[in-house]
Image 1 (cartoon, rainbow, N blue to C red):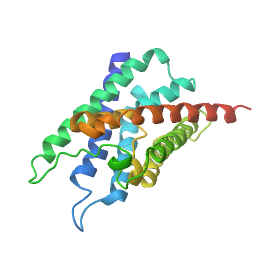
Image 2 (spheres, helix red, strand yellow):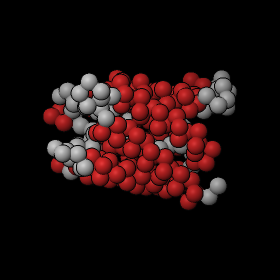
Image 3 (cartoon, one colour):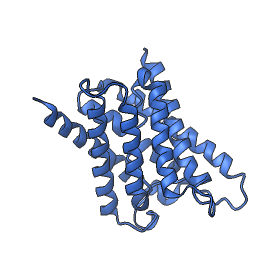
Length: 228
């Protein structure tokens, strides 16, 4: 499969992740008595990964996340030379999804412009500090890569990796939505932040730095313990 086609698959997959995850948060989470809430949004993010993993996993590997791509490269599972193509495609997919969400959400009276951006301190859903956000994003992304590396290992049960990875992302959201609105994915953070601007854009640096650091740690730790 050509690199261009794999990059397009990543664009579509990341579009689906942001549309499904951030879209559920913006459009469906807060409806009184009927809204999805944190639990529903967490499952929405997980389901986007499960469904897209079965759709494009055999084409591009279904990274959908610059931190995942970088972590897999650090772990020897992905060519570093192909990172720019994947990362650019992932970010474009996230931006397109954010545009679609804003287009739909703006059709409702009283829409204030939020797109489920990530943040800390005054932009954290529950006021968590920058240190709390940094710790959360590094640790949870490290665990995410550890599980991705393990579930896609040739020795792991075949065909079950999408479920393990999707449920992991669900659990990550259940833990961290109150802290940062959950990133563990620089592309997912970039799409909403670019459109919202302001504090979301000012704080975007953390949601590139922390997930990438965490991803590299998770991949390296897995490689260390899996060797006989």
